[in-house]
Amino acid sequence: MTVLLPFVINAGLNFALGLLIAYFLGPAEFGRYAIGAAIIVVLNTALLDWIRLSTVRFYSQKSREEQPQIRATLDVLSAGMTIALTGLLVAAVIAGVDFGLPAMLVAASVLGGICAGLFDYHGAIARARFLDAAYARLVIVKNVLALLLMVGGAWWTRDPTIVMLGGVISVMAALLAVRRSLADAPLVWSAARRDLALDFARYALPLVGANAIYSLIPLLNRSLLADAYGFAEAGYFSLAADMGLRLFGTLAATLEIVMLREVLRLDETKGRRAAQKRIADNLVIVLMVALPVAAGLFLVLPAFEKLLVPVAFHSHFAAYMVLLLPGFVALTIFVGGLYPVFLLGKRTAMVTLAACIGLAANLALVFCAVTAGPERFALGQTISFLIVLVITGWIALRSLPVLPKLRDVGVIIAAVAIMVAVVWPLSGRFPPLPELLLQGALGVAIYGGLMLACDVARCRTLLRLWLALRKRAA
Image 1: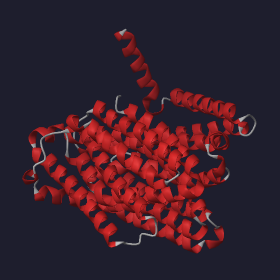
Image 2: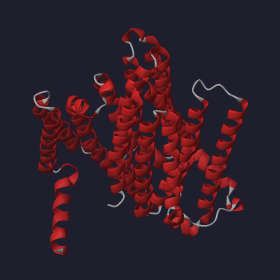
Image 3: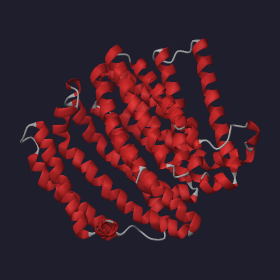
Image 4: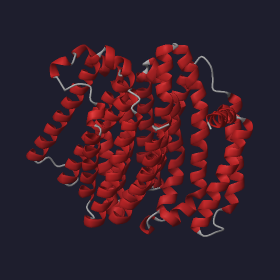
């Protein structure tokens, strides 16, 4: 599918982006950059993401033709929030508000948050209308330019503010590249409807509250870590956290995009029960992808660190990543597998409650386990994400008419265990590059072979069907 191409490219470029920026900035400046990047995520999530969520749920090719007022309302909301945030930023800078960080870095972060919101909104429009080529162009242009401008800025200036501004420019260029493809009609403020805006807010804001809390946890931890141990330690922690969030965030978003739109289509055409059954089947696919990726990253981590991580971050990166990995897996399972349950049933308040409990657990560990040192910040984030997964998983599974196939889940867990048992003894026996390639190839062969042999999620059946169709076409 064309929609998968940008995510493959996105994952690779994001990994390279974070590592190269860390290499050129160094631990201390990367710590400042990471706090600014966390501000971008919080602003986008708390103030703009509700527009994207409303687009995913209420906008489609059918509504575009039959209810043009939906797109008009979404456009007006997006433009209004952009203008309001820009005005607040200008007023704060003129008033000389003390942010605790350089004013220009904060300004670049706010602009980055606005651009991130606009990017996500236009991406949701492309996905809702199944404009896969336009979506691919949007993602690829943004990521390629970000790699050039942000890494170039880090290399040339060693200034995190310049790096942030490079990200802003890349998003603006990507939006211009798809402006005509995604347009419905010229923006008309009078075409928007207040009742629709209120419906969007009632639907999305509880879920936005939960997502804002998830994004607030990394920002709080990085800021508190910088205050307690300095920006360099915050940089060590942030590189592992950013790499993990980029990898597993991209993985979760890919699973969500590929599977959620089919769930929504089933809900629209065949009813709620058919959509819920698909969600149960999709949970198996999420586990089949997320668990081996996490186990594989853990296995190759020593070779990966020696080969690709900047020398200034060695040992710190692996130590933090090991502590953060379970939380990343929990986040992937929630976003890719459980989130559609609450989206479909419009029960987003439950997610917000789970997020609040997770935040409380994170803060309790950060402030109480002082003897654990800087590692407590990674443990707090992981425990908070695991708590959210347990709460939302219990609620979601109880609401589904059928459970995921337990036989497939058991096979996945057993296959991951076998892969770990075979690949683990290879760690530290070879130079980094051959070791990384050998471990990766062997892990894929073992796990993939077991999945096909046991026909988990009907993967062998679907592969046979695809090959038969290719043969017939040839």
